[in-house]
Image (cartoon, rainbow, N blue to C red; front, side, top):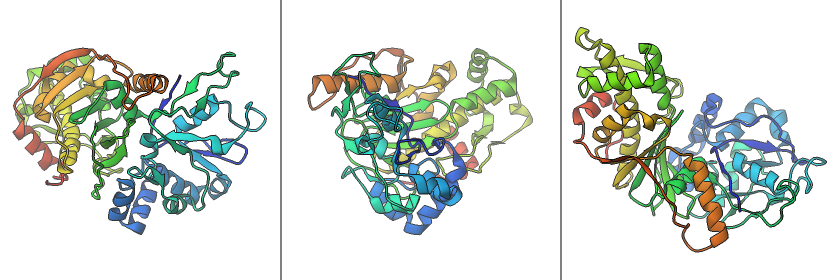
Length: 418
């Protein structure tokens, strides 16, 4: 069997002939920020959170559809089906596609998805596992075909022999959104929190209860096993480390050395790391800032420390927002390219205030898809066991309260109180 893990939220719009109407709009395309604000204002944040578990932000598919309706009405009028990137690829693997180009043709009703990825569209009720067509129409302007929501270990079809080099009988799993795929690949269970330091920063946790946060800080997504995956996402993560190396004109190893040479809190120097706007909080037009600048803390080591702490504090605020929703965090699993930083590994336990584990570097979204494919083959109520190696042993440090307090003051104290 095979399964696909794909980037969440991407809008793949298809016409009646199975052709892509226009280039996919990806989650980090903030052109739909106004559409998100309009949709939220029309129904109210409480209504959106109650039905979908989330309040619309520019990342979600429904906001992309509203942008398409408002800015490219000729394209919107052609849309006969809307898929997510992993849905579309699974559909193509099964042999479906544009008329005259794919062996099974444009059977739009053959599109299928999973609950995790569909929960990020802005028009799925993740508790019931059903679409709210009124919300879809509110975004696109008309109803259309949506992928069937499959069970977590259900085979949604087989790979077409023309795609598989003549092989037959290769089952296709339902796939997953990238964050749910990573949770599956990491073997996360309730109490585990994944903090992913990639281009974006993601804080996600596996829980048995859904989240309905009307503040919009926490997205109430589903996971790939039948549970839930509340999530807070920042636009700014590992690229903050990239920016620090450019500012200081040092290598990543040298950045680690500098950051670890400075004291905790960088003697009051605080970076608010909104270098590309921000999603949590929802401030797409925000910019970053350095606060507390004094002669004594204007050294390369202090600046390096401030960049690392600022990045981690932004993610810790996401975790705090999830804890305000009732999450009981037992440990943090630190993953992504930024997790390889020795400074990040050393500073993170104090910023998060819980045990921090660093799994060995790996493509956990792909590993999660592979684990799902094994589950499709083996069956059962739970996914099969999966090995996981560690790059760094579990570490706990006293909570760096002063660091978090100074960051809260600098960033405007946007974190909601429990």
